[in-house]
Structures are given as structure tokens and as C-alpha cells.
Length: 123
Image 1 (cartoon, rainbow, N blue to C red):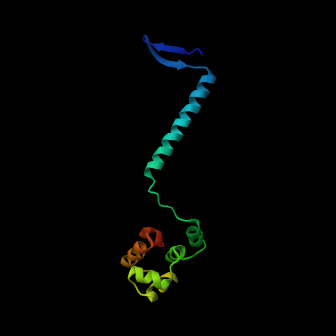
Image 2 (cartoon, rainbow, N blue to C red; image 1 turned 180 degrees about the horizontal axis):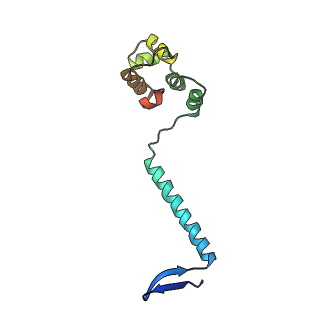
Image 3 (cartoon, rainbow, N blue to C red; image 1 turned 30 degrees about the vertical axis):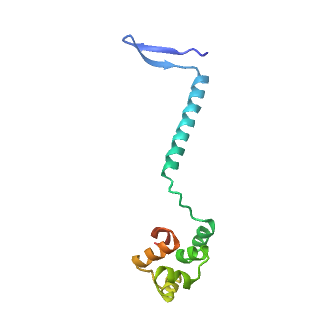
């Protein structure tokens, strides 16, 4: 085993001097423990929601989010507008960015697409 040197002050151990090999092993083990704790924290906070690559790529390429999600779900404008309770013309205006869409409308569209309003909102 390795030899550890203790430095005392007033009869109590205050410092430990350890060989570099032991320090390196302990340092690696501590880093692994930190990584495991971080992984567990992230995993416990995961809500399971994922944005499919097709949707993310379409939005990054400039597509309007409602349209990207609608196409991902394989819905026509008519089908989505019926499901959300809005007119097809209004949906078309939102998808072409002629209108922003009221929060109530975006909520109805989000519910119809099974996503959060945040996924449909543009800055």
C-alpha cells in the first residue's frame, strides 16, 4: 500500500500528504463520481420531450415552426385547422408569417400537434 504522511498541529491531524499515484487515482475516481452525479441530475430532470431532426432542421433552415410540426405529423393545413378549431386561411397566414397568431390560437395548434406553445412561438 502507499504511505501517507500526516501533518499535525496542536496534536491533531490537519494535513495529509499522499503519493502522486494515490492522488491521481483518487482524482480520477472523484471525477467519475462527479460525472455520474451530473448524469443522474440531468436524467431526473428529463421530461422525455424530443424535437425530431426533421423538425429541427426545417426550423433552422427558416421554416415556420407550425408548418414544420404539421408536416412532421403528416397533416394537411385543412386537417390541422380543423383539429385546432381555426380557419384554414388563418393557419396559412401563420405558416407564411403574414400573421403571428394569438396566444389562444398557438395554444390550440400546440394541443393539436402535441407540443408546447414554446415549440411554436417565434421570437
